[in-house]
Length: 367
Ligand SMILES: Cc1cc2nc3c(=O)[nH]c(=O)nc-3n(C[C@H](O)[C@H](O)[C@H](O)COP(=O)(O)OP(=O)(O)OC[C@H]3O[C@@H](n4cnc5c(N)ncnc54)[C@H](O)[C@@H]3O)c2cc1C
Image 1 (spheres, rainbow, N blue to C red):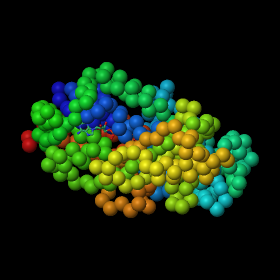
Image 2: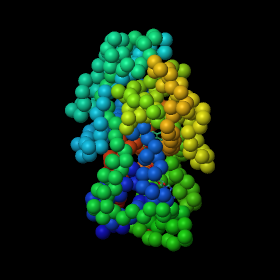
Image 3: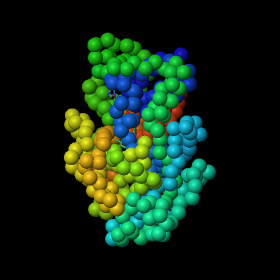
Image 4: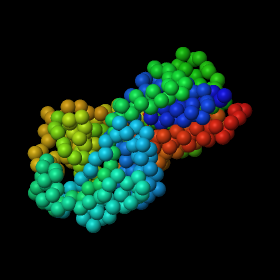
């Protein structure tokens, strides 16, 4: 039986561990804090293909993620919510109606047999009837498509239960200081433990673990911070708000009786604090207010949170960040497998790919 250590208990680490254990490996996860306490609980809570990536022609990524979306519905339906997402179209500050309609139709078609319903065009009158929160000034209509919101907490607990049921051991509050190409890990108390294989699934901290271990990755990264705010306001349908200045979009989503608004995209250094700045808070308030009939006020903000994405690239310009690929990267060096990036939606696919590679490699490589 292969003995594997997974470092990091975010969704990627848990899915790798689950898939490895299902293939007969003995798996221990080491997590410096508590499972799902970092990026995996700071997302927009969507299981989606990522409609905005169609604009940068990331067709394969979108198609695969739509198939992954279907996996969650098939296997954990109770934590998913299928909803109609509206993209309001305003005079002056919008992509053309044709472009948007084609976009939502392509999104529907790419889901193939996993399509959850028809994408549609709505007149101004229909749009306002369905979304009374919208500002009517300059509104021309909307397009809509079907996508999925998740109960990420419920889904996290479901994944943990599944992982534990196949024998995965989770060591919380156990930061790992170093990993070795020989399959070793070193805890902060200096204790070294030998495994056959190690998976580095530390998310935004994966590169730091490699550096702290005096190892080299062939990949370079930029970190992107994304913030969300929760507003004490009820919203009937998810909205996709177009930001005219830079072609970005911001989601306004119904979430447990409140409205979740996000996200921002800012370059971030690993040593910086991960928090939603005043500037980001105002950006999100202004973005939502640009389509709401009743403008948002700062005192309606009930909660804020921020998370980091590692983006595989060397020199990212700010305007390219939003379009930079969300595909994951898997790197094997000796008995160490590094996992970078990805999406909640595609974490199980990533876990299966990692476990297949590890199980196929079988033998421990002498290092
Ligand atoms: C703002 C934002 C919005 C997003 N929205 C969506 C969305 O709507 N849908 C979607 O599909 N995807 C979304 N994503 C992407 C998704 O959230 C991530 O791909 C996913 O959560 C990454 O999980 P992870 O396990 O790699 O990282 P993490 O969840 O960060 O897990 C890494 C874990 O490693 C631990 N760790 C770090 N260093 C060590 C160490 N030395 N020793 C032990 N443990 C360590 C950390 O404590 C952490 O728990 C979003 C991402 C961001 C940033």
